[in-house]
Amino acid sequence: MKNVTISLPDELAHRAKVFAAEQNTSVSKYVGELLAERLEAERGYGKALKAWRARKPVVLQDASGSYPKRDSLHER
Image (tube, rainbow, N blue to C red; front, top):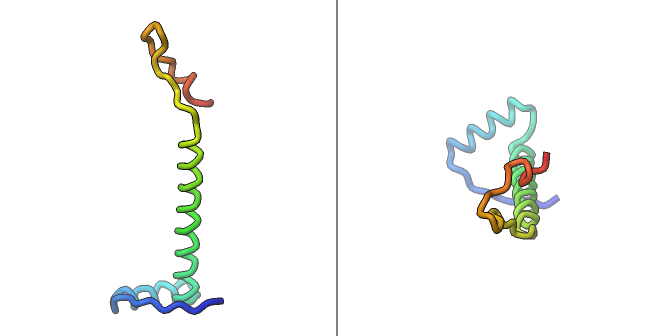
C-alpha cells in the first residue's frame, strides 16, 4: 500500500470526514474507492470508444437515394 498526500479545502476535508464516519470508513479508504471507480469508468469509456472507432463506416444512402430502415442499423 502506498501513502499519498492530498490537499483539500478545509470545508471539503471536514465534509469528507463526516461522510466517511457516517459510512463507518476512513477518508483514505473512501477517497481510494472513489478514485478506483473513476479510473475503471474511464477505462470502460476508452475501450468503448476504441471499439466504436474500429467499426467499419456504414453507407447511409444506397444508389437509389433511400435511407435504410432504423431496425437494420441497430441490433435488436
